[in-house]
Image (spheres, one colour):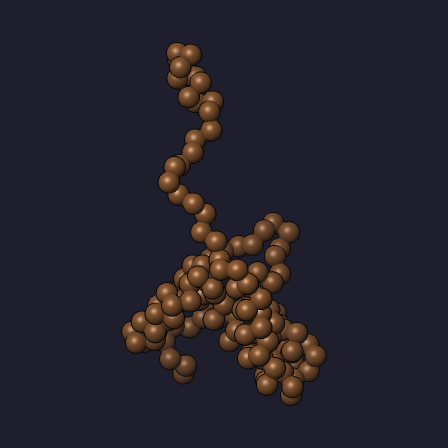
Length: 138
């Protein structure tokens, strides 16, 4: 290796012309206020545990000591619903979810928290890794 190539290898690489995309000022408080307003009407009839669980976000999920495990899931949905979800994501990408995965994770979490509030006094059910039976229920 020549001195010139060694110097280039040691220098940090930078990509020019790109800047970090920032969320609009105040978007996080706006999201919290929106979530609080949405939940205030339904939280009045819930237990304190259920009300607290309704405020969970994907970043609030319990992270195991080894870190958060991210997995892919497969589900079939109506094409019109898929298109509505894509449109909603694109329309709110700068203020809500930065990725479609985060958008789907938040929607799934909202539904799980609502079911836990309705059927399990707001407490999370014990996780299961049992395989789900494909197709409609028997």
